[in-house]
Amino acid sequence: MASLGELERAVMDLLWAGHEAATANTLRDLLAQSTRPENGTAGHEGKDLAVTTVLTVLSRLERKGLVERERGTRPHRYQAVSSREDHTAELMHEVLGSAPDREAVLARFIGSVTDTEAETLRKLLGLS
Amino acid sequence: MFWTSWFLAVLAIALAWPVPVLLSRAQWPARSPFTAMLLWQAIALAGGLSMIGAMLVYGLEPIGDNLLAGLKALAGMVFTNAPTTSLGFWHVFALSAAALLTAHLVFTLLLTYYKIQRQRRRHRELLALLASPSADGPRTMVINVDSPVAYCLPGGARSVTVLSDGLMAALEPAELRAVLNHENAHLDQRHHLLLWAFAAWRQALPWLPTTRLAQEAVSSLIEMLADDVALKTESKATLIKAIAIVAGGNSGSPAARMAFGEPELCDVGPGQPGATGGAGSARTTASRVSRLLSPQPPLPEPLRAAVLAACLLLLAVPTALLIVPGLLG
Image 1 (cartoon, each protein chain N blue to C red):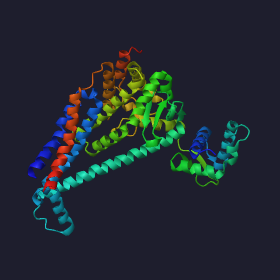
Image 2: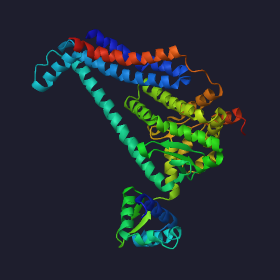
Image 3: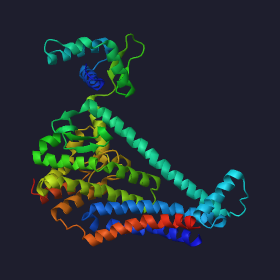
Image 4: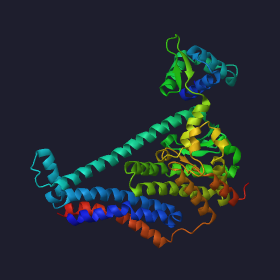
């Protein structure tokens, strides 16, 4: 059985790739398909995967603010809140931002550098 | 009591302004970053201690011969309604200010801690979905970003170093090892705790010169300490080249910013060096490189010992002034 973390990742990959809302049943079927080739003929992960597990994963993702549920429809249809690119941009904004209280969150190899400084550095080191 | 409070006040003022200004201009911290780091910590701790201590001792002066007796008398006034007539307006004012400042410092420290933890947790959650594990080890992840980016996200056992695809493509294996060793040094030496404390110190007292200078100095010193660790396994030329490539790739080039679709980042450009911390970190990179290009010998042993003695005195003197009279009396 795949861990919840791995399943979260697999579900998000499906939602990001699909561009449209999907039900837990659809997602379970897609997950079963995608795990089969890796496990040869057995495909045990797909068979073991219950819809309730997918729902657990979806509610965890919902709590993290990564997926949203369409209200009113039954069964619920889920979709990603923002695209993979938007989330990557969110991360990079946190990394490249330079507010003092952000600097304590993570440590970058190189802080912000101005154009002129980067140019000086390159010249200094004989890189073009 | 009276002289103690004046001495502590003078110490607090010295540590709030002239001492940090001088230390931030000094050249030697680049030669012995670890010693300088200890000195900054001693200055911050002793500064806070003497600031609060001066007000406390002044406020308690009429009701006790020493701090402990004064505190006992004060507790009597608060809890058993003993007469407070012996305390004048300024004494009550100083005591209130000491209590408020203490609460403010502790509260800001905790608030900053929760803010940082929340941001880190969110960051880790997204990384778990967006980044893939790297071949370099369990603590390393690779994220699909074109610019060369490397950073570490502290979190105890879940600490992780993140490299971008762009970085992996731009760097030779040895340069990559230098970057990884640098980031792992941050994690191993728990630099995030220092950054947290000094970020909170600045957040709490932003108008005090020492808090900004101290935070900038500490940010810069931890980079030097991490560089020194990277130099243990990789050559100086390798590290410098890695710095230059990453700095070049992250600099103003609009392409690098457009890649993230992040217009806000364009605020940090040439000529307007970062609304907040940009100027500081640019200085950090420059001083790191010049330190690598023209290395200076570390401070001689006696001088380092003298600085360490100064650190101890800075912490011991205010503490002793506050506590020892009470123990003797």
